[in-house]
Image (cartoon, rainbow, N blue to C red; front, top):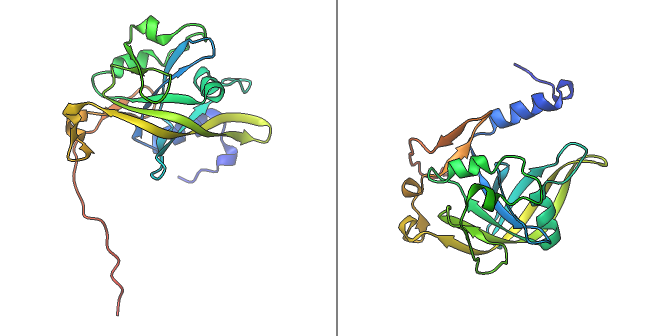
Length: 207
């Protein structure tokens, strides 16, 4: 099947991307408005961006009409956020927080989440997660076609990390104990499943 993206509508492009780029880790982002309303929402356009300094990236698609989502607007205004990682224990709350709550309504209160103080930022982290990355905003890149902004690519510098003691061993996070959950296409989530190791490839110059 050969597909010319110029012939596709937005929904067709969306289905190809989320069906082909899998599995995707989920950033459960807590942010705060200028009025102090704590917002919590999941985003699966998320990954590591840099090691030194530690940076992560999250792409937040805009609403119809190019309107910023609450998370992106909060981060742009206050310059900080927390990524609460998603696992098998909190995925139900994460899924519920994906609902389109009004800006003045806090998912923390509506869902019954447990906010905890962060160490380096003012935005709280969620006790329902066992791994947290506290972040300061580095930059926001507006993505789209010309003046029609479709997504806000948020790059945050990680300034503090929390890891549950049970998950941390020998300087690493134990994936099997962590039990992370990822996003697939449609309404589908996935657990890690079978894991296997492979030595890193080595280039051997031919004589």
